Length: 169
Image (cartoon, rainbow, N blue to C red):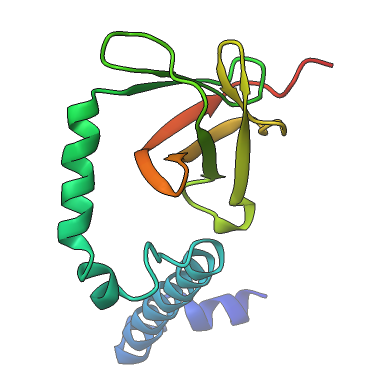
């Protein structure tokens, strides 16, 4: 064992030479390459990084989106999200603070870092706003809320929500 170790560790009989440095540098770069490939694999397997499929086509609608955003701001509507019981509830209010009802409300709900849990949820009108039917698991979720009056999109917002626990058992 001592003879094997002495071949790898510098001492008086076996001084540090170019081959030792070559081995040290090679191991360093191999480690960096393995870590980079591992990180790249996990980054691409959990989140594709796509917000839109084709950015050029999306850019053609930019002025329409700005106009819709200005109209939404002029309405003065506000959405408050609640997930205290593990189920998403949205309270929609107009500029004067009155509840808004009679609209089609949907939400794309997903994790910010993993598109595998993304889902489209239709919210049902209840006495205190709009409520999803399915519970959310604990953790941070991104909610893209879309409110339609007929075919017209009248309100849209994207907000993070935190679910501390699932539904009560």
